[in-house]
Image (tube, rainbow, N blue to C red):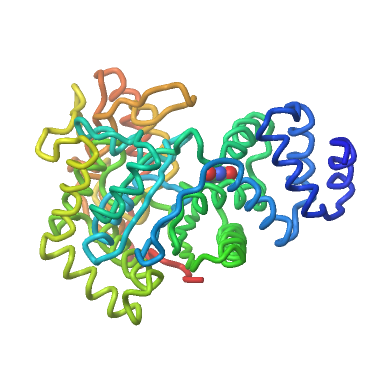
Length: 427
Ligand code: URA
């Protein structure tokens, strides 16, 4: 089919045939399709949508556009994907915890862009830690250590790489079929038999409204199941940051606290919940409660911490080396006494980005030590002048510029504060 006819078909809201979608993705991958035609089609999909069948075919074709990794089917491989949020460091304690429960976790993660941090940026603050392993090393370490955490290899889903770069600059990111195909083509190529999705919703998330998050979760599940994977999706809160830290090395430090059996309650709870769902997806545990009990044991016995240290060593890092720290720090005082009603995730994410913890463009390098720590959490009482959090940055000027914004992100009340719900739904 001529490219313009394919574009017209979607522009007019008609359904594509499987063979045409596969030919289209082949032309995206070999570069024969020009950017202007690909962009026009992306916009047509954004406006007209795709059926579940079209989305599954698109995902499958994008997954097959590059190398795919296959594991021994006897290995209980499970991964999780989070749509990203402020302070979302769950993957760092989760992968070694799941490994300590006897699962195999092949995890390919991304870098932060916009407000949400990326697992790769966090892991790379560990001195020596390598995230650029080959597919063969990735396969070997997943089997030997029980978990391996790397970045996207060049050969994995190249059609997505080209389409994502164009979507980013043509206003065509917010489309459920395109997001589904993009996330799933990479996750399916990575070879895990089970997939857990953490779809975040709230002011610090990609999907701000709960209905949007549910629609994305349903779409991810439909495609994953159609393509033969066991899948579960959680819809979780991202109106407030997770834990007390936002920023790369600071979040690794908090992840280590979780692996030591301490750390903030919400990070521990979500890590255990996700590990339990992964345990069930792997087929190693008969039900959620049995898997959750095993997760608590693996965390509190130090087995998960041992796996983390083994993973860091296997990937070239030194688990005993000090993490980078920012040159300057400053506490932000509470303007008055009260109980914390809300900590605005978006505002905290913006401040952390401005302190140097994130990147505004893909070619920027974040400051590994920058960010926010000791952040108060919903329900805590503070007195006037006590710290709401501590800021970390490379200069006093950066601290000065963000202090007010961070104080404004925290709402204090004299009245009662509702309990925070972390998981809104399990699908
Ligand atoms: N993450 C991805 O990998 N792709 C998208 O389209 C959106 C988020």
